[in-house]
Length: 90
Image 1 (cartoon, rainbow, N blue to C red):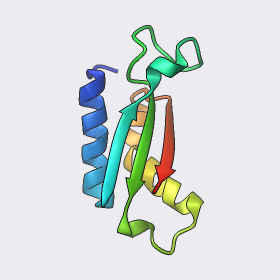
Image 2 (tube, rainbow, N blue to C red):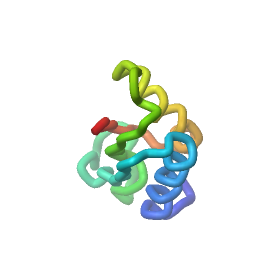
Image 3 (cartoon, rainbow, N blue to C red):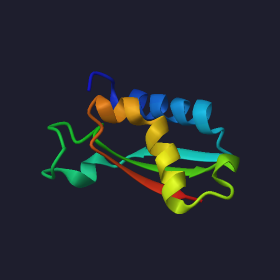
Image 4 (cartoon, rainbow, N blue to C red):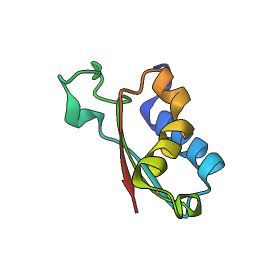
């Protein structure tokens, strides 16, 4: 990926804000915890993220449907090299 990891996390958060209007949101780069794992890079940043999110759009949706909304909102980042996204729906 060409973006700095903090910039990348910020861009991911902006995409989630725009598409899901969350009431709570945190995007955390956890790449350093995955050094040596599939999808990790030499920097230890920018490949593995955790998203903690709440959104009124999740109401009446199954867990799978909620996760799908998050993945759909972040698809451009996945396409650009983000390897893993852990999702915590709060």
